[in-house]
Amino acid sequence: MFKHQLAIRVNFFYFVALNRGDMDFDFGAGPRYPRVSPSAIAAERATDAGLCGAADPPEVCLGVQDPGPGHSFSTNGNVTYKATNDLNFALSFSKYRLTRDDTRGVAFDSKIFSLKTTYQFTRFAFARARVDYDSITSNYRGQFLFGWTPNPGTAFYVGYNDDMNRDFYNPFSGRLEPGFRRNGRTFFIKASYLIRRSF
Image 1 (tube, rainbow, N blue to C red):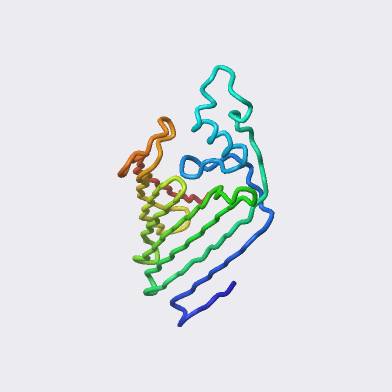
Image 2 (tube, rainbow, N blue to C red):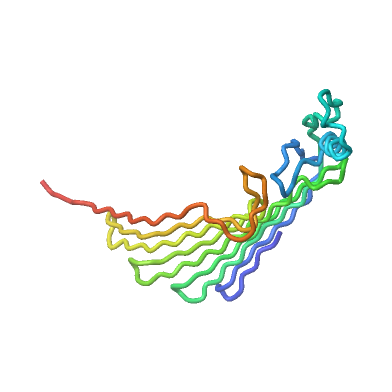
């Protein structure tokens, strides 16, 4: 682990860890990372061999849950850049990968990226944008916000959020859907005003 600062404008942090004995609880991580336990692999092979289509399939076709230990690799880091006194950028990254000891199969390999930028127009007004990406679900999320806070208790916000997937597996059909698919988007306005009275 190390941290470095350069001319007060650039800061970065990075961390790496290797662990033994982390448990895979054998749930799988979606179509991209199906179960990799011995029982799941045996059930898949039996299905491919045509043994599980009979009215009374053998026990191997059940693919019972079979938790087991494994080894993991994790890393995360971030970089922040202060372009000016008013403009800041921040990029962060994290990765976590778990591999089972018995089958050498990858239980999951998750990567998450996040980019955030903030611009301070004046002491009271700012704009902020953030985009996140999750590799397991191929999900992109964008958050954009303008805020104006002229005094304590008084604030005005205008924002927009977007949520979409790209080349992802549909959770209902199980099929791969290429391209971008929007899950939802939100536009909002929020305002508050503090009324002060003296008696």
